[in-house]
Image (cartoon, helix red, strand yellow):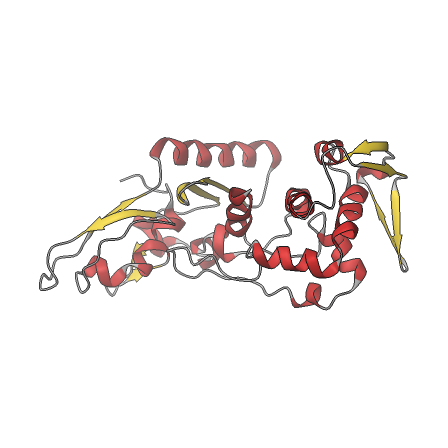
Length: 268
């Protein structure tokens, strides 16, 4: 009845009566009534109820999605399309203490009632869990948190920025090649200084930095209760080249899904 709302999360019932994509496919057997379980916890489903195991009736599923937050997220994506002409986008809202997904919006989306009219099947894919992206400067949060936890830096640690960092035959610059001069770690994060993130990663070293990326679970799936989740082992990064770790410190040269990033930041 809500047409395009949360279409990639929900999925649809295919022509042969089987669930396709999203929750419809992930919970197909339970919705059909062939399994009987009660579940609570991380993901997109708050709980579902069904009668005893002998019943042939399917379960009723109650989502963690908040109607108002989901509506606003999709409205924001439509507005961004109008103002910036984006090709696609994703907004996720998660409750960090529980892992409940309160909103998972994608643009473009589709109407599950008329799924057969969709010409590009890629629109059925949920960008939050089925498409990689380079997180960019958002990843500085991860780098900084790792170094703080290892006590390699404090918020007051000073870094003197000269606008660039040379690593082998490569040169890393700040946005617009700006030179910031003397800045604290707090200011490095506030101003999103690329070279400052490289400085922090060097304090950690390759092995510890890689260990934290593993601890933040960037090399494995989240195991969210949605069909078709992908993940990257980031094999190129793991080869250990200094330049790869340097660029990864500010979110370049590493591929993850939006949900992986949201879960990691939720831990922080």
